[in-house]
Image (tube, one colour):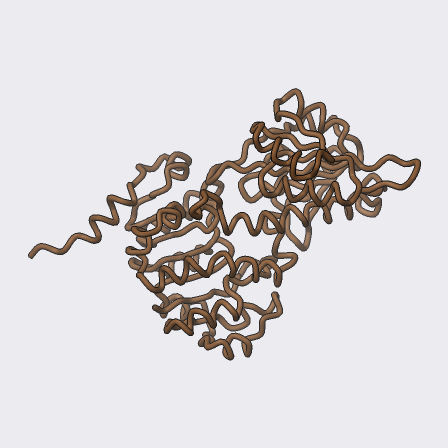
Length: 380
């Protein structure tokens, strides 16, 4: 199979869809991998490394797409990239269609592209393997970011995240006890902060207490508890995820107004719309803004700040799925792997994801039925 890796066109996206190690694995299995020139440069993977791994370097996105049956990237395809794709081709990337513009999904439907959202793929345990890797990175980075912006240079409170004798530590409130929240809580507790985790799922709260040996406080994420916790927080980490859907605003604008001046919000949920009402997407180059005296950090692609680590982790999680598609073909791979099929948002001109269909008032298509139709022998 011919597989293409595009250079990310978004200025603040520094990751690449596969490392040279991942390319080498595909080439060793007999597949051809085209890599756009300097696709890995910002993650410090040179073209020479890709060539040594067996890749063919191409010089434009158009060339990559025209030569490839499956196109890989990290961020959602641009309008130009989607227009270059056609029937029978697959794009495998983050999509976040539930918070995208209608034109983006309409273009994928018109072009009859098989669009696979990496953030929706499930493994045999029901976990989201690609999202989980990036969430582990995001959870760690959230506390590094919070510690930095608590300092006074950019409007923070001028306090240490941890503590010294005679001075209490910062109060960290984490909204959500999934991968991001659990990782952030581990880092914050390790740094000596006073940590509270709120979630609606008691079993998750029980797990995080046991994991961290009761070094964190937990509470049910009711509106009352959220308002009270946020009011006294020095740091609020937004770590809410509804699979494939827009994140709900569980921290309202009125709650933010009540927060302490110089406190810090890190809304890790921003790639799904954000769980803080006052959040808006920012960039790695311009990551923060102040609202009501509160520092907001809302970078959708936080892991891109550690592009080399993120690329290696992404490759580890992505490669088994790409290998399966390359060996079996896209249709057979989707029929054989239900977890992979759950990532499919468009197929043969139909929207196959119910949550996305509801957002855009589209008639949802049943992927299994569409795959069975495409598998039927033609009748002359």
